[in-house]
Image (cartoon, rainbow, N blue to C red; front, side, top):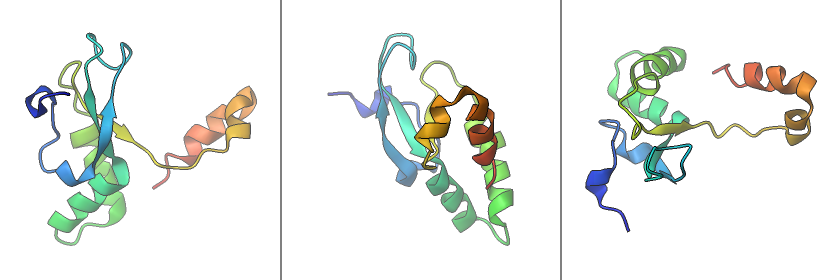
Length: 104
């Protein structure tokens, strides 16, 4: 369906790709972008690092990989945390959900 050359990849993280995203809110032309699993990306960083704790690997990842913007084809990163959907619809508790998922 799509040529692999269309995708902008995060170098070294191919094993963390979990799918593609489509839609006008994702890319200007609605074309696909890659989705990476955050936990898998952090694991890859830890596998290649000497004496790096998970928290350090996560910090490195969020700043150097997830924090990089390369235009509308920039990949997105999936947090597989399970949401409490009841809290999600409760406006007063949305901030708590966000803050809970910031912890590594």
